[in-house]
Length: 285
Image 1 (cartoon, one colour):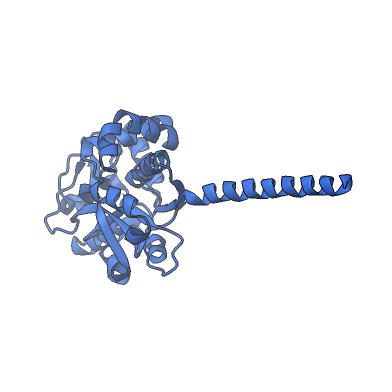
Image 2 (image 1 turned 180 degrees about the vertical axis):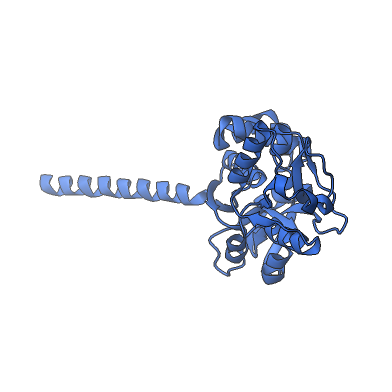
């Protein structure tokens, strides 16, 4: 009888342990996961890490995956996509080729920023004001336009600009951070440099810059659209509704990028969210 009682006690203890584990696993699985795909661009990083901080505050698990823009569009368009969202789709112009390939399998939820511009950018001390003047000063620029990754829409626009304006220049492919490093080095030496630039970007806060006039209209005005995979709205209606309201102006975005630049991605986004919590939280209501 005593042996039977001991076996019963062991069985009950094991059952309680299994039940507790099951409950724990159930609670963990109840936290929905949002996966955000993002490129290595200043504003894209800022928007993405702000989203991570906000969604985690609201009880979601958030995974971030850094990819080239073409891969982002391709992944989100898949029927069983590993991603959910992209917060920095430059539409309708700069990313028009990606949208032509994948847009019918994607959903535009909103606009993270509504005044995106691109173009060729020089420091204020450079004495030319138009793309049409570049060839006359080729030697001062070393015949180079410092660009970013070849998958970026602005890279394709710049190839078009070189053709349209018959520029005797080569576009140097690098990355966003490498482009800014080249700009910083040139400004410190008061050297002439022309880069592929865009707004919003924190470089406009850190340097005195200007766009070169573009009389042929090669570089368009866009929005930074928020796009998702199909079915995301049905799977996570609260998050989708949040992103339909999500929109930062230029001052908001520059202060967010400055916080991230000074404190790092997570800490900077968290401190900015705390300072702007009332505005952001209202988008969840």
